[in-house]
Length: 252
Image (cartoon, rainbow, N blue to C red; front, side):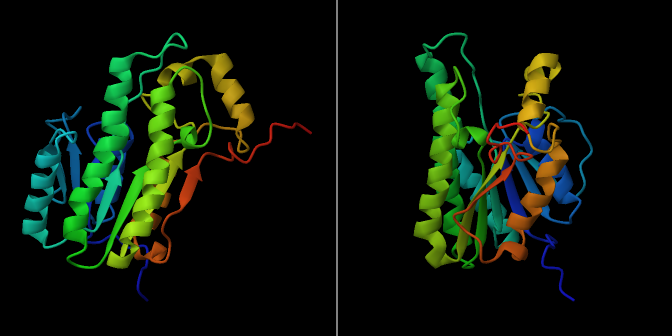
């Protein structure tokens, strides 16, 4: 029987894979026998011995030309690009309600604009084979406003709608575009909140499963969206949030 969840020999590009969620996904998906290209401006483990199917490429994804050239090289080597995971993201919470212009521009440039142009680069190669899957890593902030971080909220909301727009435009090429939104996952980005006992417990209480997520909780949904198991799914939002968004906040 064919394994519809198989990633064997699928060529997968992951942006922001130098650390955190992207780095973890690169490791885990490589164990599924996919051919992984982890892309970032720098890597937290540059001297790590990598399996032969996991490649690290230094690239500033805010440069359209540089990222396109990376895609061109990958396609030359494999004659295909199967999956792009737009994972790269920045967050600069403010201490006040007045948010700085520099941090606004940096956040939008990476979280939204670069994701758009990375997607544009890959479509040139995906449509040659009339197939492809793009997975945008969004956030709870694509649905809910959190305080003092308008750039992050705006960028993730924009990325969510960008995914739906591209799904509409690119479906005719056999390309699927979906959004995967993590809830409160234990990462370097959320370390401060998790280490604050009061904040940690408040967020556990809001989550229906009563716990913070692990990065491992994102692996299964990524495999699903990258594999043939999701061949008829596009333009959708999947939230890996332990039930955060479904919780009306009413206690029994």
